[in-house]
Length: 444
Ligand SMILES: [Zn+2]
Image (cartoon, rainbow, N blue to C red):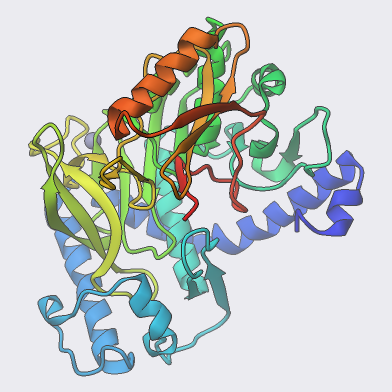
């Protein structure tokens, strides 16, 4: 809707009405009685391992039974999950139609990945699946202290403000949701103070944001030696990887806890952080297996997330290899009391790596900008000859030649001294069609 000519050409107050009406319809469809009941059911077993196991075992059994009996790709595989083969994105792309279960009830919604890496994936979902997803979102918001009616800010990938618009306001209102929606596409340094001011004057209590968007604001506050002047309950992030450094910075500058959510379009795993900062694998959302994948630099065990989707009987994915990794934790339980298993952290997407001088893959890039002052955002773009352009959004007063040299040195330290590194200042880090920021881009 936001890219339609009608929306783009409308005056701002009409855009507010269009946006609010759309949100109203979506809310009515998703947040119905079924959703509320399911949310309560999910909340009932968070602190009770027996109930949780009962629920998860039941879901897994339903998934394999359905697959074994109705899904071409799986027919006759049996009801023991161990007998099922590992699959990945390429398996789905080459066997698209074999994963569809014939039990089509009601509307079918075809979602697709943005297709920034490789072929886009199309996965059909039924309404039940969308309502179930909403129940998990509602439970996640409850973890973050959100109550119905609280004032929210939304800084995610929606193109709510046309790109051609160069002057504030870079936000719109969703009246029925009590929400101010701010554009992630207009976050140039000169505009950032207006983002902070408008959230404060709206009286925002909970912020839902892409990590890159809220981190940009936190960095802005840091370089200006400010703290967010409003009173927030929490910040909820998802859809991009959030580094420990950025999470800490956001919590410090906004003076509240960040609740981070890892999920993926294929819906085969969800991991959520709680008020004690631990990441919990939501074993009622999906059946997750962790395949050992070597050690981290500090010697911790790393594992690949392999998941089985509980909530899309129309298109069941079993033992799907995500290509994403977690670092395992030694902690048996969390002070929050929830009984979901804990992981130490979630590592960047496998796509987010650069090649070092010996063509080795370097995944963890969060350390490179560390200690460089005046940086509001950064992205590494690597060319075929392995040279790197570091795109930076900076605070002009703080980011000087010394800081630039430091950034180049840090990059060479991780990737090799022979790699040519140049720093290029930009107004904003380019975003994908979905408004996301990729930490690293390889142009080959
Ligand atoms: Zn916890």
